[in-house]
Amino acid sequence: MTGTEFRAGFVSFVGRPNVGKSTLTNALVGEKVAITSSKPQTTRRAIRGIVHQPTGQLVVVDTPGMHRPRTLLGERLNSVVQDTLADVDVIGFCVPAGERIGPGDKYINEQLDSFPRAKKVAIVTKIDAAPRPTVAEQLQAVSELRDWDAIIPISSLEGIQLDILARELIALMPVSAPLYPADAVTDEGLEARVAELIREAVLEGVQDELPHSIAVTVDDMVEREDSELMDIYANLFVERDSQKGIIIGHGGERLAEVGARARKQIEALLGRRVYLSLRVKVAKDWQRDPKQLGRLGF
Ligand SMILES: Nc1nc2c(ncn2[C@@H]2O[C@H](COP(=O)(O)OP(=O)(O)OP(=O)(O)O)[C@@H](O)[C@H]2O)c(=O)[nH]1
Image 1: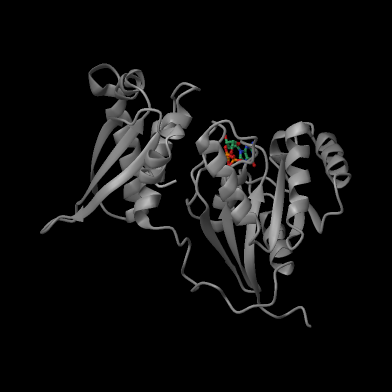
Image 2: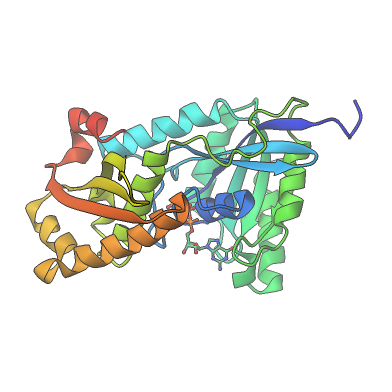
């Protein structure tokens, strides 16, 4: 085998909530595909971003944070993670440079033993936010967790070592023809991406207990005749009446802000002007109800 053969395969980034997995996916792919938020556990779906390089192709499968399940939604999320990881060629285990390795990281690291097929790479994230000696200590601590195929320190925000990470990941992929056409960025449907952008806009500036109670569905996306406008009809589900009030705000002010924020992102994604109709609905305890979970796409 020579080093010049084209390689392609699947990689998934795992790690505690908030360690920077979505931001890394976006930085590698170079276009906004996974939502990011300063609130933990905002990723719910396996979203694929595709990284194209002359030497190969990386299909990034973004998984929700692994954690011990507390609700039915939590269990479903974990089973998504299990199914995803059983299939990938490389697992990238993310830990932030500035936080000591704790029980959560160790738990996830131990879970990786269940996926012997995948090569395992440790990614020390957010190195821009930690002093150099701390980064060095973290690299040492991570190296003691297991025998990694590679250990790579990066910063997604500052774009440090992302090219090296991409190259290393591609080198670990099997020799293969490209899996996707060269212009593909993600295979997730447009409606799902629009729904994620709306959810991201809602999550900005809400109270801590709310994020897990919010789900978004897009009912319809309709191109207007004789106008470049696209009409988008979306529903925003919360679990309780009291949450409905919080989302809508005084005189609908908060909802209007959310709509404006989401619309800007959606227009950037679609490259056209958008009319966004957002309706807030209550789906009581949807996280614990299998029927409602199904309806909301989980
Ligand atoms: N300083 C710094 N912050 C970062 C970097 N990467 C991500 N962050 C921040 O860390 C927070 C969490 O990032 P996410 O990418 O949403 O984390 P995640 O691991 O996908 O989180 P979940 O979806 O909750 O599992 C956000 O506020 C990011 O801006 C980085 O390279 N440097």
